[in-house]
Image 1 (tube, rainbow, N blue to C red):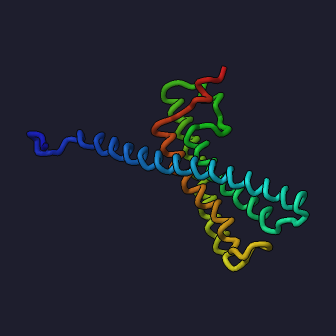
Image 2: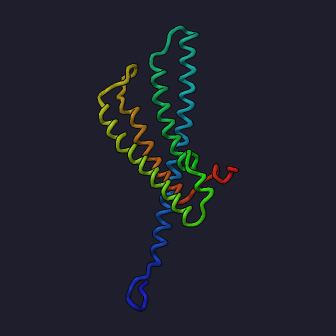
Image 3: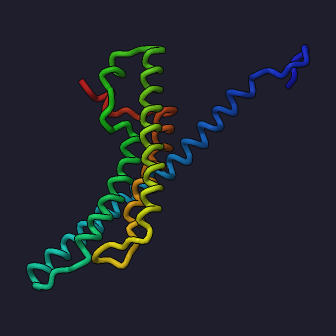
Length: 182
């Protein structure tokens, strides 16, 4: 609503920021939950493939030609998806000593610096990961008739999802490790 002087107040701005924050956290909740579920499912698949490889090699005496390669690629995807969850929870190695010792504006600066550095690193992974996926698109895995780009796509996809998690962690920090550290 305009004020009596004819200018519009900036009271609507916090509502826009709260709305953007709510949207970011809602998107993050879905992405992080999906990443966690997929990473857990991939771990189960990798365990089953490893069991099959042992059974095929040592019990059936017919080594499987595709399980080791599949497990390697699925492990890469699992790690990248797990990294999304770790970024969201603030569970990765960080400069937590500076965060523990800092207060007020300095603490906000340290958190912002960590967020900016993380996003810059992840954006670099997205950029070069996309380039890598593009370069290997015509190559196939040795034991699978599948493009190598599917394996390498874990890098840009995981990094892009992790950017959302880093931004969500910045606006709504989950520092269980930091609060429980003595």
